Image (tube, rainbow, N blue to C red; front, top):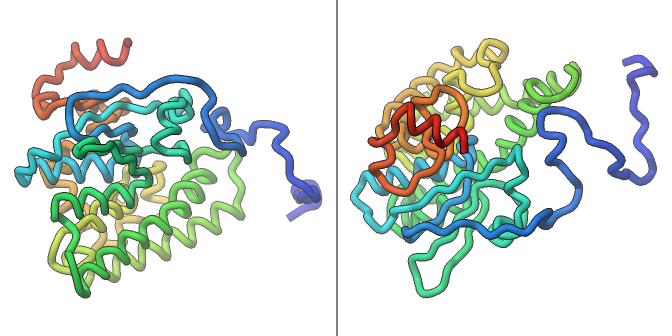
Length: 293
């Protein structure tokens, strides 16, 4: 690397300018709200504030899977949080998630509302509340939680690392792209080897670990993240592709990945979800009206 491209860190780092890239205007080194605004509250026991990014999809898939099993108590309202507009920095959202990241959930099913933030925590909360998709004891529970937290620890390499430098950074720099590509491919190899021995991550049963990992790594091997499928040769991870396609075909997953989505094919968008019938009453005219609001 030439001296012209070498960066010498200052003794004390200071935030003096936007760092560039697609999300530069919403990034800042301090926490807390930027404006006062209450969150809307719907009619159901659960109030979800989210966006159909991989972390948001984990939770909407979980809700739709619970409803598919007949858990009427899992009915939810899903309000869209537009992170490009800084909705996550409203006072209401920060009250639910002080980290200002989607998804954030209010459980109003009991006497006192409970806030839950971080997608993994929301999945565990719902799994334990309804007794589904998380074994209650023994090796199966340990395996499920291990793979769930593997995803929570791995996602920053895929999203904040590879995704940022490959897709969103204002310039392409070889070192960070090489570094994060290597780590993402190592993780894909970990996943592929595991799925060569098991139908699902924790064994024979579909769990919250599969929901969490599928939202990120499933989307990657299905060619839906960062336009990087060819670059990372995702088709070579045949066991992961088999698993991802099987989960993708689930009706609840098809519904869940639509919720709070406001981009791509209009047929795959449901900006907000307040009733199961919302999936059936969507029309091109309605989508156009929602987009114009």
